[in-house]
Image (cartoon, rainbow, N blue to C red; front, side, top):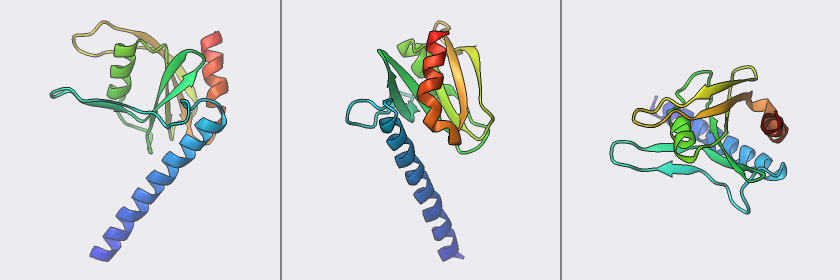
Length: 138
């Protein structure tokens, strides 16, 4: 049983690393990657840490990106980034159909910041640049 469980854990870790490398490569190939590096955001404050999986660049704007394996998951870290950095848009890859909606951050003790939240399934990662551009031009 122990061997089977360790193989499952290894398989999941391998898939996560593979997915992260794939996304970083596509962001680089489509011109969204930060110059010469994969970027993420990690805020460590006492009893209030937050982490965003990727930061991508579009023109002079930084767009936070979260990747979730399933259909659910919170957006707390994404909202913390948007609230602190006043990001006009955020991108989330998950297993849901594509959609976008106007949102406001809801972080206790901070002003609400409006932003566009773009939901994309992983198979549309190659279209992220176009969709972000469409949002900024709208």
